[in-house]
Amino acid sequence: MTYLLRVILAAIALGVAGFPTLAQYAPNGIQRTPDDVGPREDGSGAFRTHCVESHDSHNDPLVWPGRPGATHRHVFFGNPNVDHETTIETLVRATTTTCDGGRLNRSAYWVPALYDQQGERIRYIDPLFYYKTGYHVLAASIRPPPQGLRMIAGNAHATRPQGVHVAKFRCSGWRSNQVWFDQTDPLDHVNYLPDCDVGDQLEIRIVFPQCWDGIHLSAPDNQSHMAYPRPATPPHVGTGACPRSHPIAIPEISYNFSIYVSEHLGASSAWRFSSDMGEAIPGSSIHADWMNGWDPDIMEKVVLNCLNTGFDCVVGLLGDGTRLRPVELD
Image (cartoon, rainbow, N blue to C red):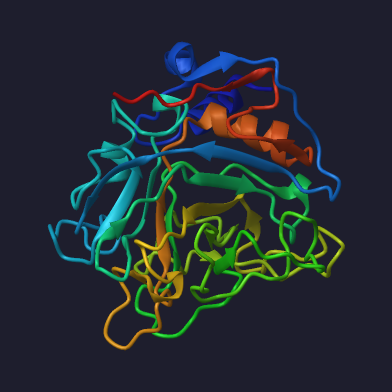
């Protein structure tokens, strides 16, 4: 390898906007673990991480940059200082986060606030954020998301339920005899807020597109630079593909929430998101925003050790005898 090529590759590895390296923050963000990882039966790979609520506001730095209080109420996870002025450059300089791994994951995650029948906000307790191969593309084809990537999943203006490939709801007490590709994804998901029994949990999953055009880190609509893959044919994982217009497969990111249903909260089918406007069917406008603030070395570990190999890395495991240090909040 020539000296010039080594310099170019090093520059690419460093990325944009002054991203920190693993060496700078590893002592605070990761720890050794005896927990092991193993292959998933279906050949897909998975990594999960944990973030808690950081704050809520009427800001949205992707849709309404520079416009304070311009949108419906959002709940944020990760950087507690995300506001209308947040950019990738300010995001990656954050010194605090509510995500496992601390400054190794400076990503910003946010969703519309959820309200019960009395109009009180329902907290998102212990959400999990998945980075998976998904079932549609080959596990070996997954590449780390580019530094600075940002995107939106779902349609905040929808008044009717969206496709189940974007928004999935189910009651944890449901029992399905049919599965899609494996037991973790039964075919009883619906695309609307179901009426779960008191004492049950409402499970909510929002799935991002995983096919990137390879050029743009964003788009005017925050979506057109990304696409969903052509579906695989069950039960054969990896038999789909990214479209030619968006040929690069990155991890399938999803936000996953489980909320206990109680008499106080009322019927879960009557809950509403802050973006459910007017005559919208409750739950129709579910959407999610994401800004990539991962340390590139850590995300490369996730992709190489968990996704390309088809391994199941449970919460925080990096597949090499280390894990993200759990978040510690006052």
